[in-house]
Amino acid sequence: MIHRAWPPERFADLANRLLRHREIEIVLLGVEGEQELAREMQSHLEFPLIDLVGKTGISELLGVLKQCSLLVSNDTGTIHMAAAAGVGTVGLFFSTAYFAETAPY
Image (cartoon, rainbow, N blue to C red):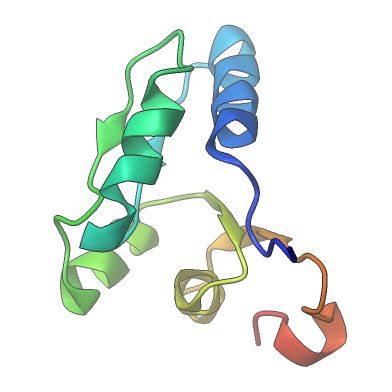
């Protein structure tokens, strides 16, 4: 099976490492159908975060993104929105997703 997403436990590991060494806030974003993935990620966290999964529409999402200094994301529409809003992005592209074709513009 081809996977195009980083596993929740890997996102949790990254969040834990960042929160151990930096005074930052992490906001978890996603659509309503990703709430189980969000719970899975949170089960691996050592620190609290702000969970907005399934709680924002597109306009609210853009408002949240504009307050961020960095977005780490799988290859999603959200990473394109963040790039358009001038937010720094780290895009995770896997398998059949070619960066040159799907990178944030």
